[in-house]
Length: 416
Image (cartoon, rainbow, N blue to C red; front, side):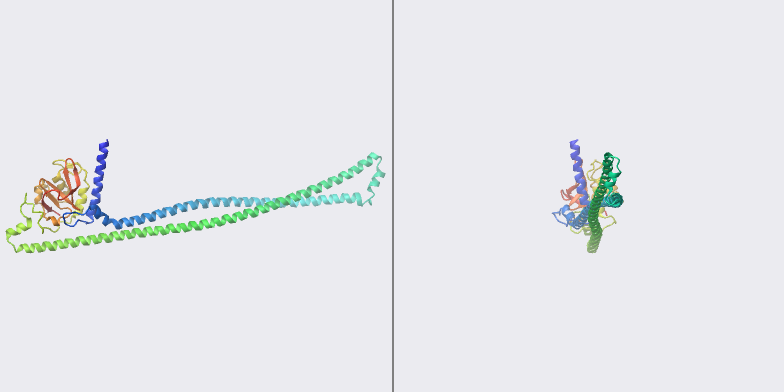
Protein backbone atom coordinates (compact mmCIF):
# COMPACT_ATOMS: atom_id res chain seq x y z
CA UNK A 1 0.00 0.00 0.00
CA UNK A 2 2.82 2.40 0.90
CA UNK A 3 4.71 1.65 -2.34
CA UNK A 4 1.50 2.19 -4.33
CA UNK A 5 0.98 5.57 -2.61
CA UNK A 6 4.48 6.81 -3.47
CA UNK A 7 4.12 5.48 -7.01
CA UNK A 8 0.89 7.47 -7.45
CA UNK A 9 2.52 10.61 -6.01
CA UNK A 10 5.44 10.21 -8.42
CA UNK A 11 3.04 9.80 -11.35
CA UNK A 12 1.07 12.92 -10.31
CA UNK A 13 4.34 14.88 -10.15
CA UNK A 14 5.15 13.81 -13.69
CA UNK A 15 1.69 14.79 -14.89
CA UNK A 16 2.02 18.24 -13.23
CA UNK A 17 5.41 18.74 -14.87
CA UNK A 18 3.91 17.73 -18.20
CA UNK A 19 1.05 20.23 -17.80
CA UNK A 20 3.49 23.09 -17.13
CA UNK A 21 5.61 22.15 -20.12
CA UNK A 22 2.53 21.78 -22.33
CA UNK A 23 1.44 25.31 -21.45
CA UNK A 24 4.90 26.65 -22.22
CA UNK A 25 4.97 24.87 -25.59
CA UNK A 26 1.43 25.92 -26.50
CA UNK A 27 2.40 29.56 -25.99
CA UNK A 28 5.31 29.14 -28.35
CA UNK A 29 8.02 29.75 -25.75
CA UNK A 30 10.81 27.62 -27.20
CA UNK A 31 14.49 27.32 -26.37
CA UNK A 32 16.84 28.95 -28.86
CA UNK A 33 18.91 26.41 -30.72
CA UNK A 34 22.01 25.46 -28.74
CA UNK A 35 23.64 22.79 -26.62
CA UNK A 36 22.42 24.19 -23.28
CA UNK A 37 18.57 24.35 -23.20
CA UNK A 38 16.81 26.97 -21.11
CA UNK A 39 14.84 25.57 -18.18
CA UNK A 40 11.11 25.16 -19.10
CA UNK A 41 10.19 26.36 -15.63
CA UNK A 42 12.18 29.57 -16.23
CA UNK A 43 10.39 30.02 -19.55
CA UNK A 44 6.98 29.49 -17.91
CA UNK A 45 7.84 31.91 -15.13
CA UNK A 46 8.85 34.62 -17.59
CA UNK A 47 5.73 34.12 -19.72
CA UNK A 48 3.28 34.05 -16.85
CA UNK A 49 4.68 36.77 -14.59
CA UNK A 50 2.13 39.39 -15.86
CA UNK A 51 -0.73 36.89 -15.49
CA UNK A 52 0.35 35.94 -11.97
CA UNK A 53 0.70 39.62 -11.03
CA UNK A 54 -2.85 40.33 -12.19
CA UNK A 55 -4.18 37.25 -10.40
CA UNK A 56 -2.43 38.33 -7.19
CA UNK A 57 -3.88 41.84 -7.52
CA UNK A 58 -7.40 40.47 -8.05
CA UNK A 59 -7.09 38.13 -5.06
CA UNK A 60 -5.90 41.01 -2.87
CA UNK A 61 -8.91 43.11 -3.94
CA UNK A 62 -11.25 40.17 -3.28
CA UNK A 63 -9.75 39.74 0.20
CA UNK A 64 -10.33 43.44 0.90
CA UNK A 65 -13.90 43.11 -0.38
CA UNK A 66 -14.55 40.09 1.86
CA UNK A 67 -13.11 41.96 4.84
CA UNK A 68 -15.42 44.93 4.18
CA UNK A 69 -18.41 42.61 3.82
CA UNK A 70 -17.59 41.06 7.21
CA UNK A 71 -17.36 44.54 8.74
CA UNK A 72 -20.75 45.48 7.23
CA UNK A 73 -22.30 42.29 8.62
CA UNK A 74 -21.01 43.13 12.11
CA UNK A 75 -22.24 46.72 11.83
CA UNK A 76 -25.66 45.54 10.70
CA UNK A 77 -25.83 43.24 13.73
CA UNK A 78 -25.02 46.22 15.97
CA UNK A 79 -27.65 48.27 14.15
CA UNK A 80 -30.29 45.60 14.79
CA UNK A 81 -29.34 45.51 18.50
CA UNK A 82 -29.49 49.30 18.64
CA UNK A 83 -32.91 49.41 16.97
CA UNK A 84 -34.12 46.81 19.47
CA UNK A 85 -32.92 49.02 22.32
CA UNK A 86 -34.63 52.05 20.75
CA UNK A 87 -37.88 50.10 20.44
CA UNK A 88 -37.58 49.13 24.11
CA UNK A 89 -37.01 52.77 25.04
CA UNK A 90 -40.02 53.85 22.98
CA UNK A 91 -42.11 51.33 24.89
CA UNK A 92 -40.71 52.55 28.23
CA UNK A 93 -41.37 56.17 27.26
CA UNK A 94 -44.96 55.40 26.28
CA UNK A 95 -45.53 53.44 29.50
CA UNK A 96 -43.92 56.20 31.57
CA UNK A 97 -46.08 58.80 29.80
CA UNK A 98 -49.16 56.80 30.74
CA UNK A 99 -47.95 56.64 34.36
CA UNK A 100 -47.47 60.42 34.36
CA UNK A 101 -51.03 60.89 33.13
CA UNK A 102 -52.27 58.51 35.83
CA UNK A 103 -50.42 60.46 38.53
CA UNK A 104 -51.87 63.69 37.19
CA UNK A 105 -55.37 62.25 37.49
CA UNK A 106 -54.61 60.88 40.97
CA UNK A 107 -53.23 64.25 42.02
CA UNK A 108 -56.37 66.00 40.80
CA UNK A 109 -58.53 63.51 42.68
CA UNK A 110 -56.47 64.01 45.85
CA UNK A 111 -56.81 67.79 45.52
CA UNK A 112 -60.57 67.48 45.05
CA UNK A 113 -60.87 65.21 48.08
CA UNK A 114 -58.75 67.60 50.13
CA UNK A 115 -60.90 70.56 49.10
CA UNK A 116 -64.09 68.64 49.85
CA UNK A 117 -62.85 67.56 53.26
CA UNK A 118 -61.64 71.06 53.99
CA UNK A 119 -65.10 72.44 53.21
CA UNK A 120 -66.77 69.82 55.40
CA UNK A 121 -64.40 70.46 58.28
CA UNK A 122 -64.78 74.18 57.87
CA UNK A 123 -68.57 73.84 57.94
CA UNK A 124 -68.51 71.81 61.14
CA UNK A 125 -66.10 74.18 62.85
CA UNK A 126 -68.25 77.10 61.86
CA UNK A 127 -71.29 75.27 63.20
CA UNK A 128 -69.67 74.50 66.53
CA UNK A 129 -67.79 77.69 67.08
CA UNK A 130 -69.42 80.41 65.05
CA UNK A 131 -73.19 79.78 65.02
CA UNK A 132 -73.50 79.78 68.86
CA UNK A 133 -71.19 82.79 69.43
CA UNK A 134 -68.52 80.62 71.05
CA UNK A 135 -71.08 79.43 73.70
CA UNK A 136 -71.40 75.94 72.33
CA UNK A 137 -69.71 74.36 75.34
CA UNK A 138 -72.01 76.25 77.76
CA UNK A 139 -75.03 75.26 75.69
CA UNK A 140 -73.95 71.64 75.78
CA UNK A 141 -73.53 71.91 79.56
CA UNK A 142 -76.95 73.41 80.02
CA UNK A 143 -78.59 70.99 77.65
CA UNK A 144 -76.86 67.93 79.06
CA UNK A 145 -78.97 65.86 81.41
CA UNK A 146 -75.94 64.83 83.42
CA UNK A 147 -72.26 65.28 83.69
CA UNK A 148 -71.81 62.04 81.77
CA UNK A 149 -73.91 63.34 78.90
CA UNK A 150 -71.89 66.55 78.92
CA UNK A 151 -68.58 64.69 78.77
CA UNK A 152 -69.86 62.49 75.99
CA UNK A 153 -70.97 65.49 73.93
CA UNK A 154 -67.62 67.24 74.37
CA UNK A 155 -65.76 64.05 73.50
CA UNK A 156 -67.88 63.70 70.36
CA UNK A 157 -67.01 67.24 69.29
CA UNK A 158 -63.31 66.53 69.85
CA UNK A 159 -63.55 63.23 67.98
CA UNK A 160 -65.20 64.91 65.01
CA UNK A 161 -62.47 67.55 65.01
CA UNK A 162 -59.69 64.96 65.24
CA UNK A 163 -61.27 62.94 62.42
CA UNK A 164 -61.47 66.00 60.22
CA UNK A 165 -57.88 66.90 61.08
CA UNK A 166 -56.62 63.38 60.27
CA UNK A 167 -58.46 63.37 56.95
CA UNK A 168 -56.98 66.70 56.01
CA UNK A 169 -53.49 65.54 57.00
CA UNK A 170 -53.97 62.29 55.07
CA UNK A 171 -55.13 64.07 51.93
CA UNK A 172 -52.26 66.51 52.21
CA UNK A 173 -49.73 63.67 52.59
CA UNK A 174 -51.29 61.83 49.64
CA UNK A 175 -51.09 64.98 47.55
CA UNK A 176 -47.43 65.47 48.45
CA UNK A 177 -46.67 61.82 47.67
CA UNK A 178 -48.39 62.02 44.29
CA UNK A 179 -46.51 65.21 43.47
CA UNK A 180 -43.24 63.40 44.29
CA UNK A 181 -44.24 60.46 42.11
CA UNK A 182 -45.13 62.81 39.28
CA UNK A 183 -41.79 64.61 39.62
CA UNK A 184 -39.91 61.28 39.58
CA UNK A 185 -41.82 60.09 36.51
CA UNK A 186 -41.20 63.36 34.69
CA UNK A 187 -37.49 63.16 35.55
CA UNK A 188 -37.38 59.56 34.29
CA UNK A 189 -39.18 60.67 31.13
CA UNK A 190 -36.50 63.29 30.52
CA UNK A 191 -33.76 60.68 31.00
CA UNK A 192 -35.49 58.18 28.72
CA UNK A 193 -35.87 60.75 25.97
CA UNK A 194 -32.25 61.78 26.40
CA UNK A 195 -31.15 58.15 26.06
CA UNK A 196 -33.40 57.78 23.01
CA UNK A 197 -31.72 60.78 21.38
CA UNK A 198 -28.30 59.25 22.11
CA UNK A 199 -29.29 55.91 20.60
CA UNK A 200 -30.86 57.65 17.61
CA UNK A 201 -27.58 59.48 17.01
CA UNK A 202 -25.69 56.18 17.23
CA UNK A 203 -28.19 54.65 14.82
CA UNK A 204 -27.59 57.46 12.35
CA UNK A 205 -23.82 57.06 12.67
CA UNK A 206 -24.07 53.29 12.14
CA UNK A 207 -26.22 53.75 9.05
CA UNK A 208 -23.74 56.25 7.64
CA UNK A 209 -20.86 53.89 8.40
CA UNK A 210 -22.67 50.98 6.75
CA UNK A 211 -23.37 53.07 3.66
CA UNK A 212 -19.71 54.08 3.57
CA UNK A 213 -18.60 50.44 3.82
CA UNK A 214 -21.05 49.43 1.10
CA UNK A 215 -19.63 52.18 -1.07
CA UNK A 216 -16.13 50.82 -0.45
CA UNK A 217 -17.34 47.31 -1.37
CA UNK A 218 -18.87 48.63 -4.60
CA UNK A 219 -15.60 50.41 -5.36
CA UNK A 220 -13.62 47.20 -4.75
CA UNK A 221 -16.00 45.27 -6.99
CA UNK A 222 -15.38 47.85 -9.69
CA UNK A 223 -11.63 47.49 -9.21
CA UNK A 224 -11.91 43.69 -9.46
CA UNK A 225 -13.91 43.98 -12.69
CA UNK A 226 -11.40 46.48 -14.07
CA UNK A 227 -8.46 44.26 -13.09
CA UNK A 228 -10.07 41.25 -14.74
CA UNK A 229 -10.74 43.20 -17.92
CA UNK A 230 -7.16 44.46 -17.90
CA UNK A 231 -5.86 40.91 -17.37
CA UNK A 232 -7.98 39.67 -20.30
CA UNK A 233 -6.81 42.56 -22.46
CA UNK A 234 -3.15 41.90 -21.70
CA UNK A 235 -3.60 38.16 -22.21
CA UNK A 236 -5.26 38.82 -25.58
CA UNK A 237 -2.48 41.25 -26.53
CA UNK A 238 0.17 38.71 -25.53
CA UNK A 239 -1.61 35.97 -27.48
CA UNK A 240 -1.80 38.26 -30.52
CA UNK A 241 1.89 39.07 -30.16
CA UNK A 242 2.82 35.40 -29.93
CA UNK A 243 0.64 34.57 -32.93
CA UNK A 244 2.24 37.38 -34.94
CA UNK A 245 5.68 36.09 -33.92
CA UNK A 246 4.72 32.56 -34.95
CA UNK A 247 3.52 33.78 -38.34
CA UNK A 248 6.65 35.84 -38.81
CA UNK A 249 8.82 32.82 -38.10
CA UNK A 250 6.79 30.67 -40.47
CA UNK A 251 7.08 33.30 -43.19
CA UNK A 252 10.83 33.55 -42.63
CA UNK A 253 11.09 29.76 -42.72
CA UNK A 254 9.09 29.68 -45.96
CA UNK A 255 11.33 32.32 -47.53
CA UNK A 256 14.45 30.47 -46.37
CA UNK A 257 13.11 27.24 -47.84
CA UNK A 258 12.35 28.99 -51.10
CA UNK A 259 15.89 30.38 -51.22
CA UNK A 260 17.31 26.90 -50.58
CA UNK A 261 15.17 25.44 -53.32
CA UNK A 262 16.36 28.15 -55.72
CA UNK A 263 19.99 27.43 -54.82
CA UNK A 264 19.53 23.69 -55.19
CA UNK A 265 18.00 24.05 -58.66
CA UNK A 266 21.39 25.15 -59.94
CA UNK A 267 23.19 22.07 -58.58
CA UNK A 268 23.43 18.64 -60.06
CA UNK A 269 20.63 16.18 -59.58
CA UNK A 270 22.67 14.03 -57.20
CA UNK A 271 23.84 16.96 -55.08
CA UNK A 272 20.28 18.24 -54.86
CA UNK A 273 19.15 14.97 -53.38
CA UNK A 274 22.05 14.98 -50.93
CA UNK A 275 21.27 18.47 -49.64
CA UNK A 276 17.58 17.77 -49.35
CA UNK A 277 17.75 14.46 -47.55
CA UNK A 278 21.11 14.73 -45.88
CA UNK A 279 22.20 11.29 -47.09
CA UNK A 280 20.95 7.85 -46.23
CA UNK A 281 21.88 7.31 -42.58
CA UNK A 282 20.41 4.15 -40.99
CA UNK A 283 17.28 3.97 -43.07
CA UNK A 284 17.46 7.20 -45.11
CA UNK A 285 16.34 9.52 -42.32
CA UNK A 286 18.75 12.35 -43.19
CA UNK A 287 21.63 13.87 -41.24
CA UNK A 288 20.12 15.66 -38.21
CA UNK A 289 23.11 17.98 -37.97
CA UNK A 290 22.66 19.42 -41.48
CA UNK A 291 22.37 23.16 -40.93
CA UNK A 292 19.75 24.15 -43.53
CA UNK A 293 16.94 21.58 -43.30
CA UNK A 294 13.84 23.44 -42.03
CA UNK A 295 10.81 22.44 -44.14
CA UNK A 296 7.71 24.63 -44.22
CA UNK A 297 4.51 23.39 -42.50
CA UNK A 298 2.56 20.94 -44.62
CA UNK A 299 -0.60 20.89 -42.45
CA UNK A 300 -2.53 23.30 -40.23
CA UNK A 301 -1.73 21.20 -37.14
CA UNK A 302 0.50 23.03 -34.66
CA UNK A 303 3.38 21.33 -32.93
CA UNK A 304 2.18 22.73 -29.60
CA UNK A 305 -1.16 20.95 -30.03
CA UNK A 306 0.60 17.65 -30.79
CA UNK A 307 2.81 17.95 -27.71
CA UNK A 308 -0.12 18.98 -25.49
CA UNK A 309 -2.08 15.91 -26.60
CA UNK A 310 0.91 13.57 -26.16
CA UNK A 311 1.62 14.81 -22.65
CA UNK A 312 -1.86 13.79 -21.47
CA UNK A 313 -0.60 10.19 -21.40
CA UNK A 314 2.57 10.75 -19.37
CA UNK A 315 2.61 8.17 -16.58
CA UNK A 316 0.80 5.47 -18.57
CA UNK A 317 2.35 2.03 -19.21
CA UNK A 318 4.88 0.96 -21.82
CA UNK A 319 3.77 -2.23 -23.58
CA UNK A 320 5.94 -3.86 -26.26
CA UNK A 321 4.02 -3.82 -29.55
CA UNK A 322 1.11 -1.96 -27.87
CA UNK A 323 -1.01 0.60 -29.68
CA UNK A 324 -3.14 2.04 -26.82
CA UNK A 325 -2.19 5.40 -25.38
CA UNK A 326 -4.19 4.63 -22.25
CA UNK A 327 -3.63 0.89 -21.76
CA UNK A 328 -0.06 0.69 -23.06
CA UNK A 329 2.10 1.15 -26.16
CA UNK A 330 5.74 1.07 -27.26
CA UNK A 331 7.78 3.98 -28.63
CA UNK A 332 6.72 3.77 -32.28
CA UNK A 333 3.12 2.91 -31.35
CA UNK A 334 3.06 6.01 -29.18
CA UNK A 335 4.20 8.29 -32.05
CA UNK A 336 1.81 6.68 -34.56
CA UNK A 337 -1.22 6.92 -32.25
CA UNK A 338 -0.51 10.54 -31.27
CA UNK A 339 -0.37 11.64 -34.91
CA UNK A 340 -3.39 9.52 -35.82
CA UNK A 341 -5.41 11.73 -33.40
CA UNK A 342 -4.65 14.66 -35.76
CA UNK A 343 -5.54 12.73 -38.93
CA UNK A 344 -1.93 11.97 -39.89
CA UNK A 345 -1.52 8.28 -40.74
CA UNK A 346 1.93 6.87 -39.99
CA UNK A 347 0.76 3.28 -39.53
CA UNK A 348 2.74 2.22 -42.62
CA UNK A 349 5.91 3.04 -40.69
CA UNK A 350 5.15 1.14 -37.50
CA UNK A 351 8.76 0.83 -36.27
CA UNK A 352 11.53 3.22 -35.29
CA UNK A 353 13.61 2.54 -38.43
CA UNK A 354 10.70 3.20 -40.82
CA UNK A 355 9.81 6.43 -39.04
CA UNK A 356 13.22 7.87 -40.04
CA UNK A 357 11.86 8.31 -43.58
CA UNK A 358 8.43 9.87 -42.94
CA UNK A 359 7.73 13.52 -43.72
CA UNK A 360 10.67 15.84 -44.31
CA UNK A 361 14.16 15.97 -42.81
CA UNK A 362 14.90 18.64 -40.19
CA UNK A 363 18.31 19.80 -39.01
CA UNK A 364 19.09 19.91 -35.29
CA UNK A 365 19.31 23.69 -35.18
CA UNK A 366 15.77 23.97 -36.61
CA UNK A 367 14.05 21.38 -34.43
CA UNK A 368 10.55 22.41 -33.29
CA UNK A 369 7.90 20.96 -30.96
CA UNK A 370 6.05 18.14 -32.71
CA UNK A 371 9.07 16.96 -34.73
CA UNK A 372 9.85 13.23 -34.57
CA UNK A 373 13.31 12.39 -33.15
CA UNK A 374 14.74 9.03 -34.24
CA UNK A 375 17.43 7.06 -32.41
CA UNK A 376 18.87 3.62 -32.87
CA UNK A 377 15.90 1.36 -32.02
CA UNK A 378 13.85 4.18 -30.49
CA UNK A 379 11.69 7.16 -31.50
CA UNK A 380 10.17 10.13 -29.62
CA UNK A 381 8.38 13.47 -30.13
CA UNK A 382 10.22 16.72 -29.45
CA UNK A 383 8.28 18.63 -26.74
CA UNK A 384 10.18 21.92 -26.76
CA UNK A 385 12.47 23.28 -24.07
CA UNK A 386 15.13 20.70 -25.02
CA UNK A 387 13.12 17.64 -23.90
CA UNK A 388 11.11 14.83 -25.54
CA UNK A 389 7.85 13.06 -24.77
CA UNK A 390 8.14 9.31 -25.36
CA UNK A 391 7.13 5.80 -24.48
CA UNK A 392 10.51 5.31 -22.81
CA UNK A 393 10.70 1.78 -21.41
CA UNK A 394 8.82 -0.93 -19.51
CA UNK A 395 10.27 0.40 -16.27
CA UNK A 396 9.69 4.14 -16.89
CA UNK A 397 6.49 4.04 -18.98
CA UNK A 398 5.47 7.17 -20.93
CA UNK A 399 7.66 10.09 -19.82
CA UNK A 400 8.52 13.68 -20.62
CA UNK A 401 11.78 14.34 -18.83
CA UNK A 402 14.74 13.34 -21.02
CA UNK A 403 16.70 15.76 -23.20
CA UNK A 404 16.28 15.22 -26.93
CA UNK A 405 20.04 14.72 -27.47
CA UNK A 406 20.60 12.26 -24.60
CA UNK A 407 21.77 9.68 -27.18
CA UNK A 408 22.87 9.54 -30.82
CA UNK A 409 20.17 11.15 -32.98
CA UNK A 410 19.89 9.43 -36.37
CA UNK A 411 17.14 11.60 -37.88
CA UNK A 412 14.68 14.38 -37.17
CA UNK A 413 11.47 14.31 -39.27
CA UNK A 414 8.61 16.77 -39.64
CA UNK A 415 5.17 15.48 -40.68
CA UNK A 416 3.04 18.54 -39.91
